[in-house]
Length: 372
Image (cartoon, rainbow, N blue to C red):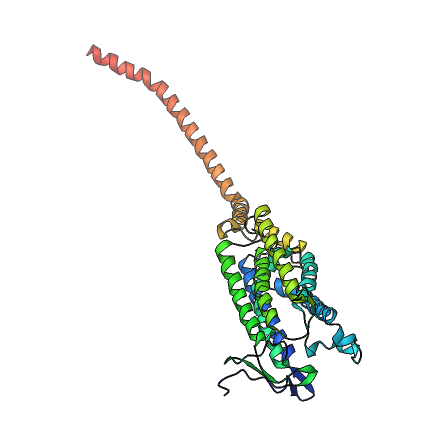
């Protein structure tokens, strides 16, 4: 008796008029937007400039899509180049088939080009977008659900995936939903990186390396459950070997990087804190810089200092007015002073003359007084 199961969609394409909306592509697009949005927030928190993550994603995403498709086509070449197959199908990416290993490898190359053009370190940018990439993978795995692909072994668990398609060798039945397992694992990896980054202040690419190592652990046991055709080496699927090698490289990078470059980058993007208008290369133009210096010397002075020129001008005007309108006043004052001085001199002379004649009289009077 069927108690519960996860149903599969009857078709993975929704036609909006003549435009086909494919569930696989829709899930990838949602994942890309989520990774860019979260990466932008983390980049700004690290001291970067808003929009830098999106600018570099313009390089990383196309490279990643090409790399993911190349890895899938190379590792499953018999699906496109064997007898009875059409090699043109190798370009039909909307039908599914992206290898995460190729996507990360070639996507990193595109990100390196973008970072080099912006003059920022690739490891710092990778640390910012690492959790977002994990969440993007969680969204992208639901594209396998739309295509009814990459499921696991048969099971009677309540959360079994019900496969209804019989194309390309599928057998209808109930299987482990490995797409769901990996989706949930990627969500856990994303939150693990966020927690570890806050707790240990990971830098210089170590947050990204932690994401890679943690993803490889989950991919190893999930890959072991899948039943789709794959190449085997020593009894293990090719992707299992790839996950093991990449895991070891990621752990080795974390150890070496922690010893050689401890701590976190202090500056992740030059000139990110400047408020001046930015030119095409993200730096202030020479004209703006010259304008700022001029403003510092003139327009940025306080009101009291800015008014010194006007105050001095007022004094000059007042001095000029005093020098023109006051000439007659000064002349009158000098004339009056000269006339006063001459009158005082004449009075002094007359007093001296009168004093000289009065002295004998006073003596005579005194003498006559003595005689009587």
